[in-house]
Length: 150
Image 1 (spheres, rainbow, N blue to C red):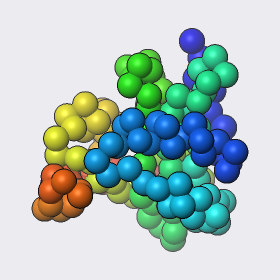
Image 2 (image 1 turned 90 degrees about the horizontal axis):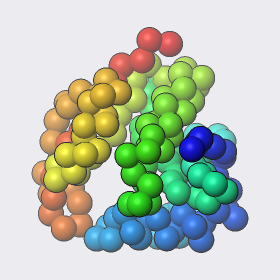
Image 3 (image 1 turned 60 degrees about the horizontal axis):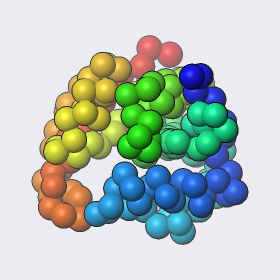
Image 4 (image 1 turned 90 degrees about the vertical axis):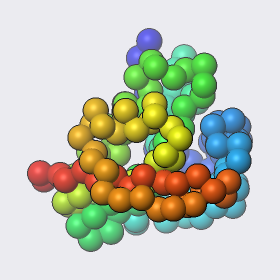
């Protein structure tokens, strides 16, 4: 199956919110938070949805300002993981960061999510620190950075 990516719109929010709540049950963003992110698109944000067979199965977002960018979020439906969806979206976010002139991309990942950390490792992100008790349930966040050669 081929993953199709396109820019996220407000019309995508019902499907995106289902994925958000499934993926992040303890600290899901609200619909209002996601609408706020979309309001800043394309000025400082770039959000995409991933489709397989016409169904939204994932979404991801980037914040970019000046020479740095931050991966805001990446989520894929549990039944569609390990199919290249997350990698396709991360590839798009990194390409957008380069298009916007970023020299580095940062992100936080839950310390208790080794699968996500492995993906970021594969893409060349390196741990640069820890934010203690960052998430609502007290879990630490691993801060990671990837230098871009734009």
